[in-house]
Amino acid sequence: MIPLILVGAAGRMGQAVVQAALSDPEFSIKGQVDLAANLRALGGVWISSLESLLERGDVVVEFSSPQGCREAAKVCAARGAALVTGTTGLSAEDEAALRQAARTVVVVQAANFSLGVAALRRALAAALRGLRGWDIEIVERHHRGKADSPSGTALALAKDAAAARGLPAERVLRFGRQGRVGPRSADEVGVHAVRGGTWIGDHAVLLAGEGEWLELRHVAQDRLAFAHGALAAARFAAGRNAPGLYDIEDVLEAASG
Ligand code: NAD
Image (cartoon, rainbow, N blue to C red):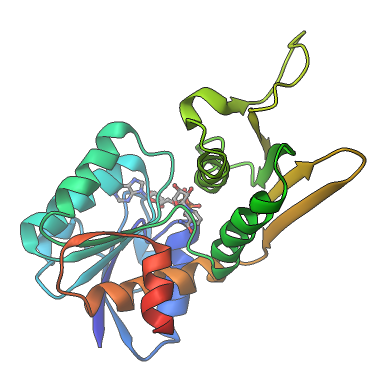
């Protein structure tokens, strides 16, 4: 059995991972960490900090906040435990903490752990190969409680699109439009964030040509979609000795090979 310690366990994603892990005999939940109060009402083994329980061989699954991600990276590296992290909206400093941890332990990071979004990214790359010069706009929708905008997935899709065109993301990504902005430039990749209600995650990539357009869209209907991907990443991390920073494509490749 793979011992899991969940960080952000009381949150929307944390609870989805608990639900998925409880129905998978390959995993045991060794501990759950969260800053939120009233954790007892949720049941399970709650611990006050990762340090109190974490040891080599454990896998930490973290969906919390940039601070929670940074802290988990440091503690995992110090204890020799693997880390699966899905938190988005990370700063350069947070990303550096993950790279630092990945020098000594296995770290799997993905802005989106769903299989459908991995397929969407591949489909986008394939579509762009045949659609030179078409305009690219990304529209994402999430629930009203989401902290970061645009979503990590929208950013990943936009960066994929810029890279496919051989353009620097920092120059061509365009976040929303307002006022008299003039005609759209050929290079830009528009990114638009919609917030409201209970949308779990909806990403549409619009490819607009002359007199025709194409939409590639993924809709997450249940957080279990992300949770099952995170558990696949935990399985991958538990079975791997070589430290490094891995992503969902590495997990899928290992699972299919
Ligand atoms: P949420 O607000 O419902 O839950 C976050 C939980 O983390 C809260 O219970 C909070 O108390 C806890 N927390 C915050 N900081 C902490 C810390 N330092 N230590 C311990 N616990 C801490 O949020 P959510 O919807 O579950 O999303 C969490 C993160 O996961 C967000 O960044 C979100 O964008 C991301 N997310 C990623 C994926 C993916 O597939 N990669 C999917 C959905 C959400």
